[in-house]
Length: 102
Image (cartoon, rainbow, N blue to C red; front, side, top):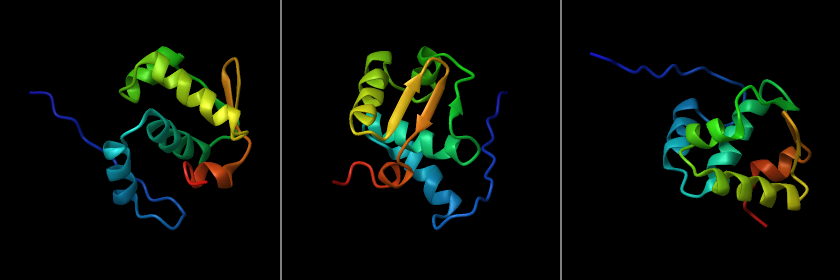
């Protein structure tokens, strides 16, 4: 029998880890899913090295590739994200934390 376990790690910040886990599983839009993933990755690196293909990232986030690309393009158009080959750079962390608030 295969069992999957989720490991929770505690990070500095105002949000409780369980709330962050719930957010990831209940994110509705492609942009929300991407933003949550970017915020998680940026805790460790910025720029974020892409160790997987964009196709694999889309699969991880349960998105179609075109939805992932549109979400990235939207964040790039807002000046929040820059894509460069195998690097994603968050240019405006504050805006990313408040996405999609205007």
